[in-house]
Picture (cartoon, rainbow, N blue to C red):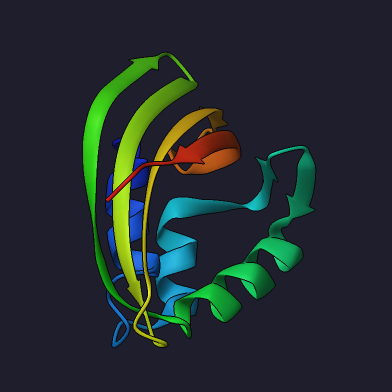
Length: 119
């Protein structure tokens, strides 16, 4: 399997509300996936719960990759995302992600951190 990209995962999981969420998550994230964001680590079940909640609040958005690197099973990427929420507010953030792939090319672990950008 060709290793997945986080930008493709974000588009499928967050920005395509008509796509089956469980199917999208299975395509990009291994069964033992863990996610660390700003010091908090989620197991796959907690990650799915968080994604489900967030997906319901987002009307649309974009992701633009700035840098991306794969080295064996290691992955790093930096992107800017812009979202519009159901309440009409918007957010624009730059995110840096570092992680690893499972043997099948899906993400096993990702750690992310980021900061807000001015509109």
